[in-house]
Image (tube, rainbow, N blue to C red):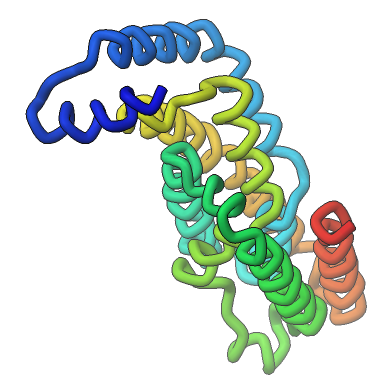
Length: 229
């Protein structure tokens, strides 16, 4: 296999395709085509089920409305796209070289999720005076969070190890898989923000808002358990 690795460098620079490498790519694309329905279903299930992103979107929609949550939505979708491409091209293999990086990422993610849970729990009622100073998560924050989101990492690793193993030698294949996930992910997670926005008319009293936000913060903290155990 080493000769294929060194051939790739020459092939990319000279526009030549190794016969064996070409056969591998054909097999990988055939595997993707045969696994496409299962892959799309996997993308839908992992996107629609509760997790850090969806719980935060539900809270954002309830506290700020759907329109104000759009930058949050776009940050999640684009961050997930870039992470999927990076994992597909072999980023996760760095953890085998530097195990400390995986541990550091885990605890950075845990710390950030604690901060987000505190923000949700301490959010003011929509009509409160302090609510005018509050704001939903912005694009950059949502984008950055994807890199320490344990659910997204697990999903990305599963995709490229189960459905299209060995796809790192074909950028177009990796990009196609990531694009499919993004096309399914964005409308799916939007349902959570819309659902939160529909709850706004029920959250007109300070006590109700406090109970809702504390519940969302507790559920977000509960998602830490699979990551830290």
